[in-house]
Image 1: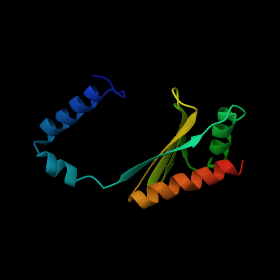
Image 2: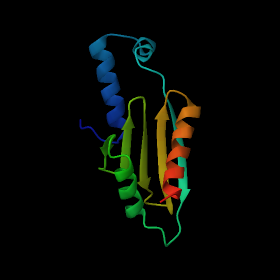
Image 3: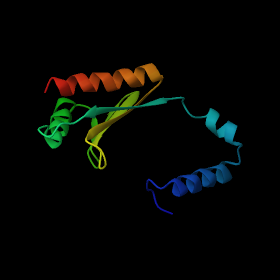
Length: 118
């Protein structure tokens, strides 16, 4: 096994945890906080420099925990947002997670406003 984006690896890790903990799925799930994930996007035009946008977002949020392995992920104390250029469409994908769907979507909208101000 390896830690990758492969769904089968995720299933194997989940089943391993179930076996180690000796719990039912519902019991395991009850121990985790509930979060909602929102998926948004920004349409790109040929003159938009995505790399410059991602770098500017990194600088704007430099005081937060930033990961830039695949795009830019910003970890806030109780939420996160991940921006990355699509490999198949002319868009920037914006994934955000927060305690509610409303907060997750608001986080994405806030990031869109930051980008539009650049």
